Length: 157
Image (cartoon, rainbow, N blue to C red):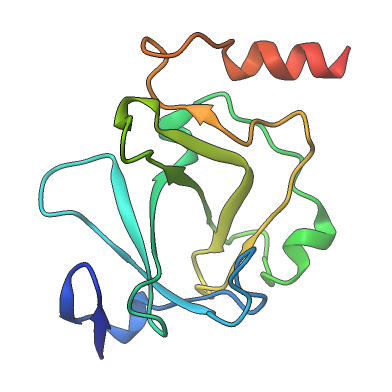
């Protein structure tokens, strides 16, 4: 399958790499088909590229790389759309925001992760509890902040 992108030009992607988000993403409900693109260099991030809109792409990272102790209470209702079975694997990714004038202040949205059923390749963007960070700093050394586990503990008290 050929897709046109504004950042990478024309790409040929395998149809079996297509991810479908039946409800779309927050702010982009009309765009439901995406592919994950790996950067040419060995990096921890990936690109989440819309198949239907050439200019729509997000930087994403596996949540486990960002916060190994990340725990979510994924609701059965939220996951029902994914048609999960007990043997299905899921991927959980966070959308990354990189300010153009301060890339060292990049953040990950842990409050609205992208969850994908590995078997069906269907995904959903979940909206989690307010105690989970909307802007989790990628570079802890450059920004004064509390680790996520401390924030979650304080919110639970």
